[in-house]
Length: 182
Image (tube, rainbow, N blue to C red; front, side, top):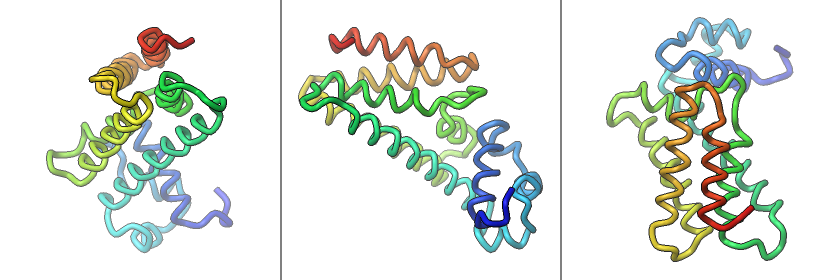
């Protein structure tokens, strides 16, 4: 890694890659330090604890989703209807599919964290925001946003278990059918 990249960014990059590939609990600080090419003191100068590093990882993944969604919405044609705006949420998820695919990095991390952990709460807020985006896109269509949210999240979980994003693609097609979109 280049010394021109700030240590904090290198540490977060290394942690993000390892947390997604191996899990939060299975990833020790020493391997992150080695991957980032920094001294242990550099890690603790940037993150007070592993929990703080996990929090930064979760926030990064959340912001990456928000950016992908923003780009998808901006790419919609003028006057795009509610269905197209809702499908932009699915497309933002698909744009973020990692290779190799292990499912939703946020859900994977949340599954390793104890109940009441701030990281789990951050993931819950992210998932609520995703459902809110669907609700905003669809307007007052009773219950459809929750239905699509459950479809999307269920597909992400199953796809993660199978190590294949096909279920997420199929969920998007099912959502398009429900919405009467292409």
